[in-house]
Length: 127
Image (cartoon, rainbow, N blue to C red; front, top):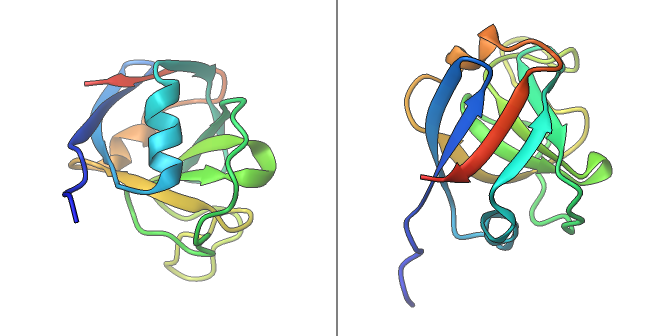
């Protein structure tokens, strides 16, 4: 089995910029192939999401995620960055609106995205 390619991306949202790594999933490959992606941020609790116009089938979707996870939300055709509880969370969990395909994670402190407001420009590109 060949190792997954090193796929590092840069996410820039407003004044915040962070590197992240995509995993070896089919979802991550579809996102990688679509880069660069530009959109306007939407927020939902401690989550930023934005439509990317790509239809990707559910791939082992998860109902809860970890701090810093990157996800693809099939119903909204959206890329998601998770950095804390959402309105659907119970206790300390991080729960998307509905299950997402986890496709990578932010390097370092994902809470830097707390500074981003809805409508901020977001760009995802190969690092």
